[in-house]
Amino acid sequence: MKRASQVALLALCAQVATAVTPLIVKGTDFVNSVSGQRFQVIGAAYQPGGEAGYKPESGQDPLSNAETCLRDAALLQRIGVNTIRVYNLSPDINHDECASIFNIAGIYMMIDVNSPKPNEALSREAPWESYNHDYLERTFKVVEGFKNYPNTLLFFSANEVINDVPTAITVPYIRAVTRDLKQYIKLHSDRPIPVGYSAADVREVLIDTFNYLQCSLTGDATDESITDVFALNSYSWCGPATFNEAGYNTLVDMFKKSSVPVFMSEYGCREIRPRIFDETAALYSSKMNPYFSGGVVYEYTQEKNDFGLVVLNSDGSAKLKVDYDNFQGQLAKLNITELQSTSSSAAATPFPKCVSSLIKDKGYPNDFTKIPNPPNDGLAALIKAGVKSPKNGKLVTIDNLKVKQVVKNSDDTVITGLEVRRLTDGNVPTPIATTGSPAATGTTASPQETSSSAAVGTTQLGGFGFVMSSVLAALYLI
Image (tube, rainbow, N blue to C red; front, side):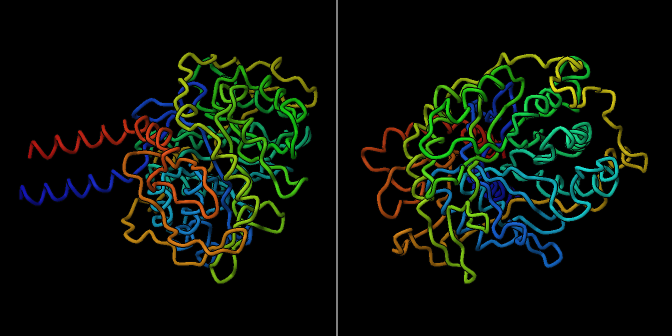
């Protein structure tokens, strides 16, 4: 019996060693829940196939195919991406293998709870009709499917619902959905998972949306309808612009007194192609990273809208675009050790009290008593009891991490030996400056890379060290 227990614990140790450490919100930062170290999002939007890639009726969504996820995780990991944003997911599909692959690669997941299909998102025209039991039950099922993955970073309650003053009629309902999700997570998840909103960068309504969602009805953090994070989809920096020309100085002024983390949930203007991603350096610079927690490039795969980093072919093969190379070059310039070790904002700005004077546009809703209560058709009971027969996701063992598909560089040379490197110390991918075919993250650093890579491994060791100590102590006591 003792031997069996030891084997079980060693197996647990091996599994935990490849798991990322869950992140929490502390003030205006994402923070490693064990080490307390600040986390900056270095992300890519991930929706292979676009809307057409979401086919729940046939069991298909972006995280349903393990071979596809393995290929993409390897390509994202090798340039230092540590987060993906996934838009359209079915709570009825098993995502264990894909979630486990991205977890092994050190990549977190931002999960949108909505989709473009009917009755799976808030309506801009009549949000009071779409805010109903069936819609909310589906969002709770998404939570059930992803809450157990340690690399689930957050849930987005809505995306770009407000695009002008008339569509701001939805803002009380966005706040209501945020509240309902937070209450559900509090009752049915073993850990806190942030809930936020992803806004369009429409300056006409942006600051009012931010003020409406992050103020407190109670005057403090006990108000469960406050957004945990605020994100924006911004494409104002195009080509070789400057900080001020792109309006990034205005964004800093808008959010420098935030009470919650702010980051870009999409960026990457395509007016000038191939894209050079000069804004990446600005986003992680000292001008911006004290106020922004990084950003998510739009997007990983080449779709009809022509924003992709990688072209995916019907036979599973892939080819990198010059945009991928350029983005890789920008990430390789970042000092990840310094970036991710910036001190956390422990003394964050207190939540402002919800008062009508926070709203500047006269046509924007400013009556905070209009935030609706849960629908009267058993929703409150559903939040308390939980959905019936939930399909809870869990990490699974992934033995073979070698990519099977043919992947070519932008110059048509074939990338050889492509695989996901198993991160064993709670680390996250680190951009490595390379030429030609880049080495996958996790390989031995060259002499000029040793200092930076080693430092990153050291600063991120806390989470794994804590778990290892606990497991070894348990082994000793058996």
